[in-house]
Length: 60
Image (cartoon, rainbow, N blue to C red; front, top):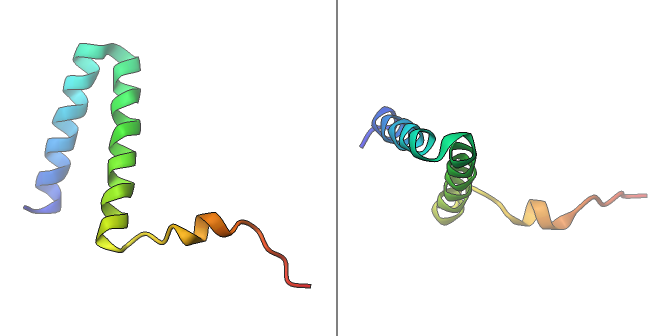
């Protein structure tokens, strides 16, 4: 499945969420889509979560 096909399906699902749930439903669908995207990248090994947990460390 190509990236453009996946984008088409995501767009259609977001349109359904907007039509049935209004603006709040649309925002909820976008947040869930972003979370699913992050989980998918983590499972594929493309997202390094340790960078977020380290925080800011200053070398002095």
